[in-house]
Structure formats: structure tokens, C-alpha cells
Length: 100
Image 1 (cartoon, rainbow, N blue to C red):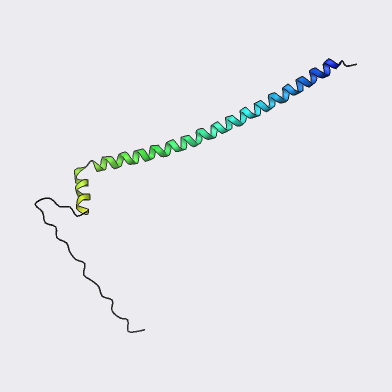
Image 2 (image 1 turned 30 degrees about the vertical axis):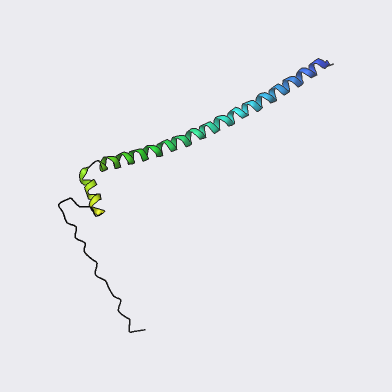
């Protein structure tokens, strides 16, 4: 014959085990989510590193005086003692198509 206290102890043990399993599953879920967050952060860090390198390369190119002068000349700037000649594009007049 089983005493009533043993039934109570079995119930406490079962509830404790269930509680432990729930907590363990929550910790596993949190661990998986943290790993995913770390992976996403690493990908973002790699992208930012590539962008940083690209911007550093652009800064090195822009530091060259000849490059900056070329950009200024493309915008139409000239030196003080130079003259800017604009060449007008010849207008092309469409010829009527006589086959219509």
C-alpha cells in the first residue's frame, strides 16, 4: 500500500522535471536565436568592412591632385590663364522620309 506522501512526492518530482524541461527548451531556443543574431551581425560586419575599404580606396584616389583637376575640368573649370572654348554640336535636321 502506497502512502499519500509518496503520491505527493511523485507529483512534485514530475512537476519539477516538467519545469526543468521547459526551462531547458527555452535556453536552447535562446541559444539558437543568439547564434543566428551573431551570424547576422558577422555578415553585416563583413559588408561594412568591404564598404569601408571601398571608401578608403576612393579617398586615396581623391587625394591625387591630377584626379581632382580632371574632375574640375570635366565640370568646365579652367586655370586663370586658360580660355575655355565651347564647341557647339552641329544640329542634325531629320530628313522627311519619302517612302511613307
